[in-house]
Image 1 (spheres, rainbow, N blue to C red):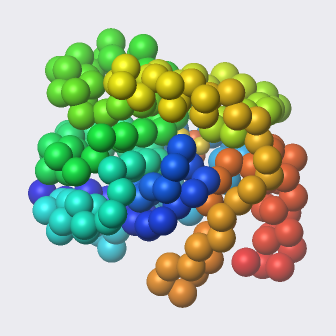
Image 2 (cartoon, protein in one colour):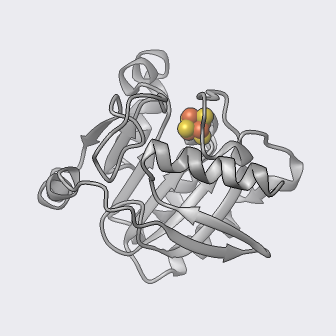
Length: 201
Ligand code: SF4
């Protein structure tokens, strides 16, 4: 079994509370206007990774905290559930970002949700909506909501939920490419995109 993967990286400081491993999946069918992660939209064979190999790597990182983003993780929900089953025993704080509205996803995928809800601790949902700026560190636009499913993490995530943006972004290097990790203010993300376009990057 395989997943379309964009990037796996540890340590990440800017996508969830604490020091985390972050998995970005490849492929997104939602395609929000002005998405800052357009490089993750198209999935092809070169992005396919064996799920057991991926699980072994994730289990070996010295953290119980994992963030899964994309791309759109729930576009590969069955294979994602398979991965989560293999890593759950080492990860007690699993945060998933999805561009779907969770209530709609549950209605349309009740069987998958039954499995997924036991394997995930926190979900942040909703598409990125340009012009709905948010002051909070964890959301790209104000419509997005956080669902804390694991009540053991309530205190940590309630604190995190109230944190305002501090403009901190992490720069990482992987496969000879540089990535900015974190959630910028919308006006800053547009400046970054314009700058990169002007440099033809
Ligand atoms: S769901 Fe996420 S990756 Fe997909 S277009 Fe929206 S912001 Fe970009």
